Length: 86
Image 1 (cartoon, rainbow, N blue to C red):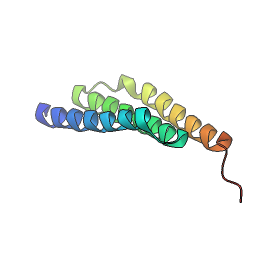
Image 2 (cartoon, helix red, strand yellow):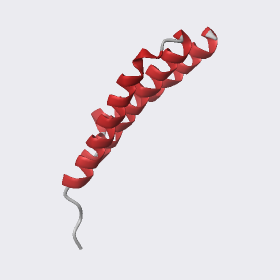
Image 3 (cartoon, rainbow, N blue to C red):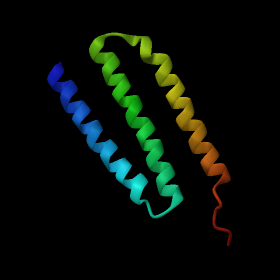
């Protein structure tokens, strides 16, 4: 199980590195917002993998808070982002 966990963490780290690159070099503010949402999702996946490997599911409330934060953040950015008017 530790090999699967190590591979999972390596893939999540690659995804986080790509998302951090997009945060730093994103051409627009919307790209940066989407990449921060991806980082939140990757943190949730990493925490879920940790909980599965250690058989300690006391971190589930943290997953719930992270999911609510990601949702509210995405909705608020979509709501207040100045869209194109034609």
